[in-house]
Image 1: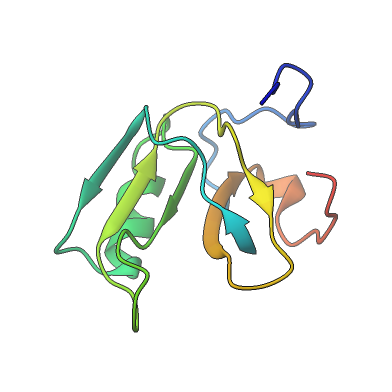
Image 2: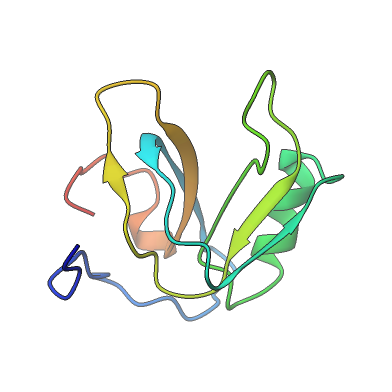
Length: 107
């Protein structure tokens, strides 16, 4: 319940061309207070939509049952993420170019 000392970015986002997304699996998705969704978009369209908006911090499928569909975007801090041993959701988090591909669980 207390997120005041949660994760912080080591490299701030500044909407550089090289920014992209790392995939994180088995998570409880963040609070959706500052999010947006579209049920008809594919995951590829969702990534493009997020990447085209500098305020977008993460995205995922909005309907995770079956093969997944729809798009859910976040536009603020990612609050209340938790890791599960299994059966969690997948979240694609926006990172600076210098951090892409790192697999450090402390992010």
